[in-house]
Amino acid sequence: MRKIVGLLFILFAVFLAVSLSSYLITWQPDQDKVFNAGNGIDFLLHNHLPILNQGGRLGAYLSHQLIFNGFGIASFIFIILFGVWGLNLLLPRRILPAA
Image (cartoon, rainbow, N blue to C red; front, top):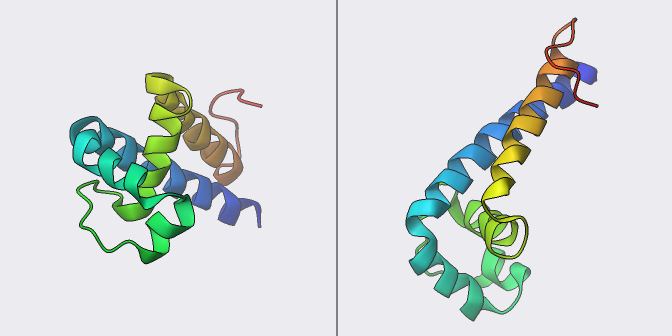
């Protein structure tokens, strides 16, 4: 179970890296679509406008929430945190002492 959770954390870190990096390039057209959708459920499930973010609709919405509405560029720290947590759960010895 520990290794599965570790692998999921690593995959989420990779997805987050792709989505946040793509948001830096495609924020303007995707942000307009997020604003016009109303809420997150409508944007993720019912909106059929094309999204330029490489993480798809979920990546565009998550990146918008983290960078625009949340922590700004410091959101990239979450990639490191989830990656380290995943490696610490996946491997038998600690990589970095992240809690």
